[in-house]
Length: 287
Image (cartoon, rainbow, N blue to C red; front, side):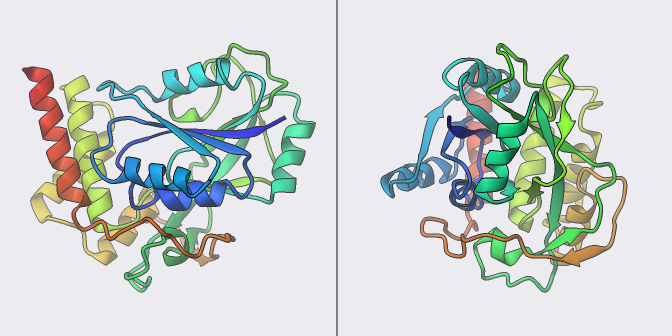
């Protein structure tokens, strides 16, 4: 029985190669849905396929937020007989292949694993394009603690994946005591600026009251007023991302065999590519 990772991604060319290579150390296969990337994400996925890695990808350019519905369709459809891990492009399984196999073998229902958030620091080697070897400090604790759901093959389908893949609707999950998930949401000034600006604009299009995602709106306003964050500000953003406040950082590099990336390039032009792509799509949508 296979252990398959499912992911919906968009504009993640600085991290997608590391994500695929690392997680395939413990997964049998990765299926990635690209939701309208305008950077090099798709070309990197194509190159990884040509390298012979067990990754497939498809394109879904829907403008609305599609993650939960797409993942539910995959879990209930082509991967209904498999063990499934739901992963974002900035998430990396912290376990051995044996530990993950044991988790699924002994599970009697959905299982959740906790986030461990990694935070960039000013003294990180900025010329290292691999986020896994560049960013080596994690938060000492998570407050609040978030979890991601894994779906063993024994869970009867159909199921409904909740937003963010933090659980399954109307189904209880058991927290696993060993396996965790490294989370790298904040990586570079250009990456986080593009993420929060486009995210804030998208949420404003859905809800003009801006009640959704107030933290993203606040950070977007800060970037518009002050420009790109410097490295000290980047650390502060990372330390408070999806958290109530900053905590002490611990030096604990993620254990990985992925020390060299072959298709990742400097993301200096990623920012303008993604902003231009967003504007183009809005013009086309509005006609």
